[in-house]
Length: 211
Image (cartoon, rainbow, N blue to C red):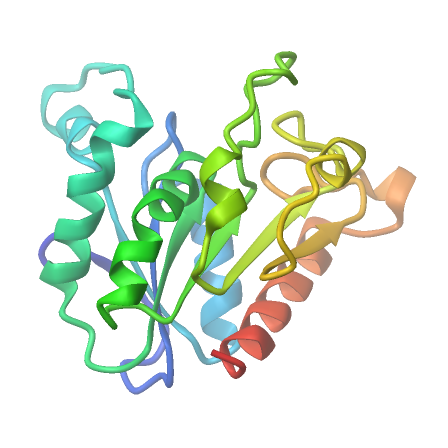
């Protein structure tokens, strides 16, 4: 870790990914570690950071609840500024982290600060609340975006998302039988978690070459 960031992957990578964590787990959770390692194996540089409420848990040992996602927008913008990437930068994250990134992406993209948006398990709606959609801002998104989603993600299944009619500029990678961490049930799908992470990472790498 360097200061507020946790880096994975080569320093001289052609693209840097700035990723934030989900609402309930830190930047070095098993899911975040596995995703970062898979992306680094594709030659990408991953920088991870924590929102202040999550960082506070490390010092006070408490379980501070996450604030409303939109209140974290300034923290994501501050992280982009603090990172000071010199090459192409893609922002995003897991679940809530990707959602916050999606809310600040267009302003940063218009300013030339970022090249794209990457969401790993986007929370299209809360589990078991399919009518409480978090998609309004996605309909007008101008930033090139890639969402990697498991087909059985309780925050948005393949069948549910198909009905949203998202704009074509948002690319979707569907991982068969994947859950919110992109993990499949191998006995059902024939795929392992490692298989899906490798597919995710290779797809991200190919996508970044188009930005």
